[in-house]
Amino acid sequence: MHKKMPFPTREVQEYEAIQASTWTNPNLGSPIYGWKIFEQIQEPTICIFNTMIKAFLLKGELNRTTEIYKNMLKIGMYPDNYTLPYVLKACARMKCCHLGELVHGQILKLGFLMDIFVGNTLIGFYTAFDNVEAARFVFYEIRCTCVISWTVLISGYAKRGDVYEARLIFEECPVKDRGVWGSMISGYVQNNCFKEGLKLFRLMQMTGTDPDEAILVSVLSASAHLGSLDIGIWIHRYVEKLRMPMSLNLGTALIDMYAKCGFLDMAEKLFYEMPQRDLICWNAVISGFAMNGNGLKALKLFNEMQSAGIRPDDVTFISMFTACSYAGMANEGLNLLNLMCNVYHIEPKGEHYGCIIDVLSRAGLLEEAKKIVQNMPDSSVPSEEAIAWRALLSACGNHGLVDLAEAAAERIVQLERHSGAYVLLSNIYVAAGKHETARRIRKEMKNQYIDKVPGCSSLEINGVVHEFIAGEKTHPQLVQIHELLETINNQLDNSTHILHGSDR
Image 1 (spheres, rainbow, N blue to C red):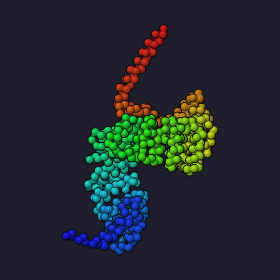
Image 2 (spheres, rainbow, N blue to C red; image 1 turned 45 degrees about the horizontal axis):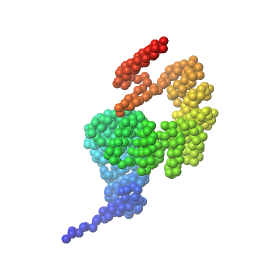
Image 3 (cartoon, one colour; image 1 turned 180 degrees about the vertical axis):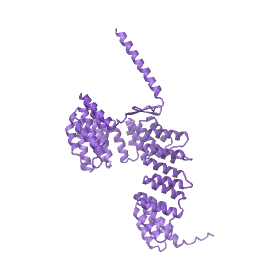
C-alpha cells in the first residue's frame, strides 16, 4: 500500500501561495497579487519575507524591496543569508550607499560576513560605488574566499580604471577559472589597454583554459581596435569548430571586428546571417561602411534599419554623418541632422556638430559650418563644445583660412587646455608662410608646459601586434629595427649612386 502524504502545514501553504503568485521568473507573475496574500498572513516566516523581497527586486520595484526589509526588522524578524544579498543588490541599484552601509553593520552584528554569498554581494555593493578600498577590506575579512570573490574585486578595480591594481590582485589569485581570466581581460579592454588584453588572452590559452563567450567578445573588441585580423579570424573559426550558437553579442562583435579591419564583405555576410539584429548590431555594420568611405551603402543600411522598425540613436547618427563626410554628401548630412533633431528628437552633442562641420567643410561650405558652430546651444561640458570648434579649426587649416582659424583656436583655448589647438594653428601659420608667428605659438606651448600628444602606430606580424609611440624607446627590438632601417637606407643610397653613375 502507498503511504499517505501528510497535508501541508499552514506555513507551507502560505509559502506556496506566495511563490505561485510572484513566480521566480521576473517576466511572469505579479508581486502585487503576492503582496495581497502576504498582507493576510498573521505571522510570516523568513522564507515568505525573502520570497516577497526577491519578487519585488526582480521586478525592479526597489523601494518596495527595502520597505519590506525595514518592516521585517521592525517586527523583530532577523534576516538570513538569503535576505541580505537581495537587499544589498537593491541598495546598489538604487545608488543608496547609506542604507547599504547600515545593512553592512547588520551583517557584522549577526556574524554573516563569513558567509560567502553575503560577503561576495557586499564586495559587489561597494564596487558599484567605486569604493574599492571598502570592497578590498571586506574581501580580506572573508576567511574563505572563492573565485567569485576574486572576480568581483578585479572587476571593481578595472571599472575604476585602475588596471595596475587589478592585475596585482589577479596575480595573487591562487585558482584562476574562466571568470577570473575574463574579468582581467575585460578590464584591460574596457580601459583601452587592447594590447595587454590580447597578451593575457594568449597566456590564458597556454594554461589550457577554454574561453567563454564573454572572453571572446572582449578579445574581438581588442582585435577590432588594433586591427589584429589574424586573432579575429581565429576566434571566428574557433566558434564555428565548436558550433557555438551565434548570439547577438558574439555576432555583433565579429561584425565589428571584420568591419574595422576592412573586411566589409564578411561583415555584411555575417550581418545578414544573424537570426536577430538589435540597434547595436545595426550600428556596427553601418559604422563599418561609414569609416571605410562607403557612404551610399551606409545610407542604404540606415534606410533598411528604419524600415525594420529599429529606432536610431545618437551613435547611429555619428556614423551617418561620418559616412556623409567621407562620401562628400553634404545635402544628405543636413537632411540627417534635420531628421535627428525634428523627427527622432535627439539633441546633438559636440561629436555630432563636429561631424556636420566636417561634412560641410569638405564640401567647401565653410560659412555654413561657421554659422552652425556659432549657433550651438550652450553646453555645461566645455569639452563638448570644443569638439565642434576643433573640427572648424581643422577645416580652416585645409582651406588656409588664417583669420577664422585664429578665432577658432582662441575659443578652444578658453574651453580646454589641449595641445591640439596650438599644433593645428601653428601648422596653419607655417602653411601661410607666417613662420615667425608659428614659432611664437610653439614657444607659448613650451612656456605653459603644454606637451604635444605623441603619435602612435601599430602593425600586426604573425599574430603579434607591435606598437610604436613617437619619442619613446620601449619596443624590445628597437635596436634591431634601427639597424635594419640603416641597412635599407644605405642600400637606397648605393642604388641612387649607381643610377646617377649610369646616366653619365
